[in-house]
Length: 450
Image (cartoon, rainbow, N blue to C red; front, side, top):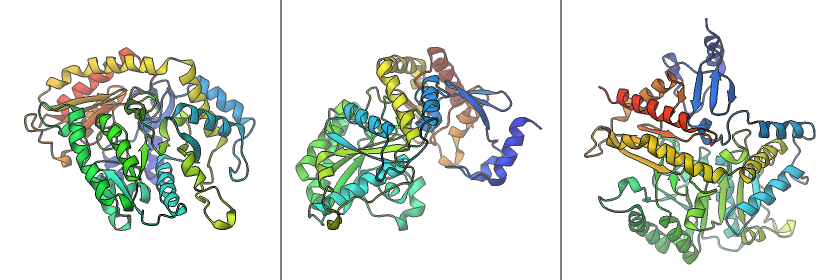
């Protein structure tokens, strides 16, 4: 019996894995990982895999990064955790100062939680509570875009629109207003993504004009709907949305959990539209992929609406036990150190160009509808018919064939349905990118054979 098999047999007796039909593992072996280094993951039998999806989009600077490791070792000798209610510590103070400095102007206050879904919950509750505190009780609803995804907790799930995750729990959810989004995949022939964004914004404009009095906030994933099969749109939509939210007195929540920290070619995706939201949710890359941490940043205006005498009961009483954990904050500070000390964004632009060139030939593949890219996120959409863009039946799980081929060829390419994508750590090199492109192409050829 192999070392991998021993571990997986123990696992399957007790571990229930996320986003998984566990019966799949009767035929699809789990991959137990023993160690990581840079872009590489290594299992207990010595097989290696390039982590092309950054371990669910969290890892920025490679596994076992020596600089982040060193910072954590030092912090471990000082303080592992302390309650953040009534207490504070240097790592969370330093991190907050730095986040306020590097995020869009006006985001002056940081509220910490444990994960991305929780950051979204904070933003939704804080927006709703703000309007109550300023005397407006009409505002009780939220607006989201079609095909959007903001997490798995009930509030976050309610403001998403991916049926695979949401449909089962519909009876438990608040009723959000879903507006057709600006997904550039659906543009008319000859239409630019910016033109398509302007046309699609008419739906949002109409919704805010007609229902703005009852709307707390609009929530969007800037530029890329990641869990929504990496669909992308033009910054023009964000510019129009910011102006409309101001005009109709509605908050704008930017969910940059997946797209923040350099993924889209700028430090934050909102920068490409030159806008500042009322709330910004960050997680995933915040700690470089080391520890669970999220933060919801907001404005002084929102903060002041909660700043009051205790007896008026206007305080924001949301809390998590591990809020502002010193180890997680230390990992985040070490991650920001790397951004400050290395030429990360410029180097990412070079790597993004390599990714584009390495996969350009896939545009001519008879079963590829589109190769799309925003910065360090590149997605390839498989279809049954290229001319009509008719998709393969989802039950055929064509993307799974690519995943299995990749595992046999030193690559982790976990699909999103019929979409295969690259979202690697920023320490990947050109040779590794070309290897991933080659493996992806081979996998697509295999996946499209009946």
